Length: 298
Image (cartoon, rainbow, N blue to C red; front, top):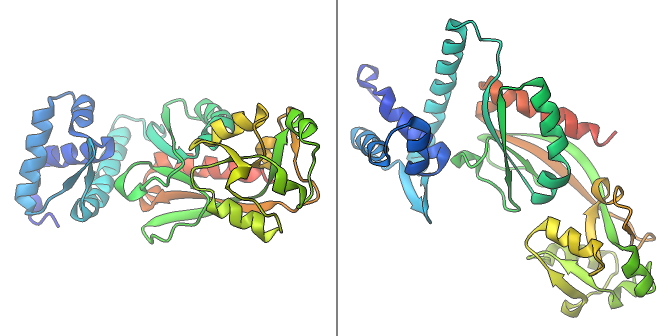
């Protein structure tokens, strides 16, 4: 895409790469130690040389266009190669250092990943971990994260995915709620129970219906877009919630709300951009997380 390699300007490419990674020209300026207008001029100059738009505005930030994504793949590989050359030249080629962004649900970021991050930092003290707690799917192609933990396998061929966990979720409620509402419940009893819901609970309602549980909107008495807040409301006695057993079974304040019903199976996929194959930093973190999460099934 770049054309004449002799005319390639790494400073402009670096400005573009950092801006894409940070999601803003201001963020890139802070990383590079220059002013925001300087980064803007470098990116604009690169766009003029290539004859394509590399960024589009999204809200208050920026995101690469399709042409930008293609260029980003190539420059990312160059950046990793440059880092490896520098480490080799300074005798530090065995070191693994730098920032790795991991995207996962707020539930995983709160209850499951922190102990893993601590263990990882003991092994690789020069790695800096950024946890991106989000219940939406981060776009790895746009560098919103380096690694993502997802509940579905991605369909993008540019992404590398590995199933690392198969588990079960069940219906749980605070023991105080179960006592107050004459629980635990069978399928018929759940029709009169209170539930804590997520923002979009159509999938949950469909899963309940498949079990013969009939619920209507009035059953859902509390709602949050945060899984952690949902869990805290359920623990406080607001109602019933579906939670992974690996989290809920460690909480003494709750119990299964309908122990006679089957659970909800789910899988977790560890996903990364294809750069995971060439970036030692990302590969080390990816393999470590895969090993730690797979161990949860044992």
